[in-house]
Amino acid sequence: MKRFWTTIVNIFSIEDLRIKILNTLGFLVMFRFGSYVVLPGIDPNRLTGVDGGGFFDLINNFLGGAWNRASIFALGIMPYISASIVVQLLTVAVPHFAKMQKEGESGRKKLNQFTRVLTIFITAAQSYAYLRTTINAEAITNPGLWSFTIPAIVIIVSGTMFCMWLGERITDKGIGNGISMLIMIGIVSRFPLAIFQEMDSKGLPGALIFIIEILALFFVVVGVIALTQAVRRIPVQYAKQVVGNKLYGGKRDFIPLKLNSAGVMPIIFAQALMFIPPMVANVFRDSDVAAYIGSTIGDFTSWQYNVLFAVLILLFTFFYTAITVPSNDMADNLKRNGGFIPGIKPGKPTAEFIDTVLSRITLPGALFLAAIAILPAFAVRAGITQNFAQFYGGTSLLIMVGVILDTLQQIESHLLMRHYEGMMKSGRVKGRSQFAAA
Image 1: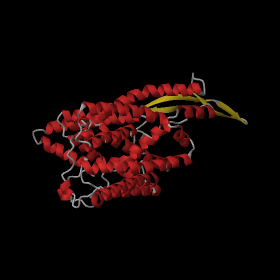
Image 2: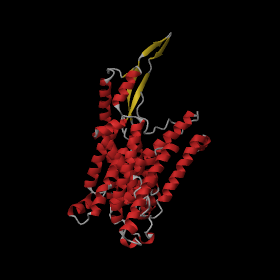
Image 3: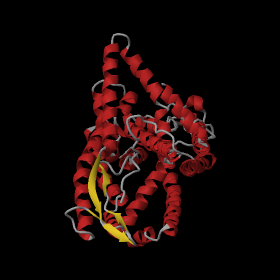
Image 4: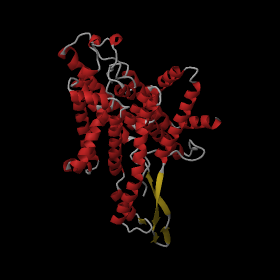
């Protein structure tokens, strides 16, 4: 306990880190406050919440309750994530966008601007579907296209853009990844209520069952942390060089390839896409096809939903890993610095070897990621309340573990850089952002 308080004192004694943490807390408070501000023209006392079943309850949990409160942040940051998915797919499929991505900082700025514009259009479309499917007519004080619908769409679009701005400010001025942090805080805000509901549903006779559930949750969390931290090390040898009268180099190192190099992004991307079919189905609810989609893809405990969700996670894991771990660049850096993998020729053979290893470790990592993602459905089938089941795996747990580890790793870096002891006595905190070193 003494070491814990010493670490806290060390963290807040570093001015730069203290300012970053306080900035992050301030931005998160603003985000949570906005999630309670109800759209103008809506009587919150008459809101009945969405009548959509399990999947829409999942959305509500994911957004920290802003969905059912008809908040100005009702869609949160999800439209921005959807736009980011589209842009990243375009950089792979369309040569113009691929060229733009390779232009360095100027190209990234153009892609970011395009993502922001696309976010506006996606938010406008999703907000119209949201208003039609979620807000009951009795709660609207002055219904009408120009008196309510259009102003509400403008406000929701503005709220999403403000959330995007908050995420960027957290990344620049705070600690951790801003977009992931906003998603995490929405999830965490529902955790105390979920525990209370689970305890209440079990009662005193079910106390033993509740304890077993907590133990099971503990082991699931341990498994997720193991998935996040697992690394395959590729040995690297640096050649000796003679500079003047001195001999340099000759050291051994390694390239750490993470079992889950994509981190939590495949889950976020897949979840963002899974939001779309049920919302579209509710707009065209009179259609038989829409009714089928609403009853299957709209139910996160159905096998159709879980199969589609798992497939999307597998695809996005390979896709995002290919983007974030460029084997060709790693091979070029090794060759330029006089490094090589023992038994592998420098250049293209090295890149192919890294690709092979990455593919072999990414497949089991992606399968485990997909299994964790669909675990809440099995938890619900086992009799656990829906809100608490979301923390048994799935998006909620993976995002929380990934974001917390990433944030702790950044704090750890600040402490070690200023010659303080690290946060963990047994070793350094490893965040998911550390993947390649050459």
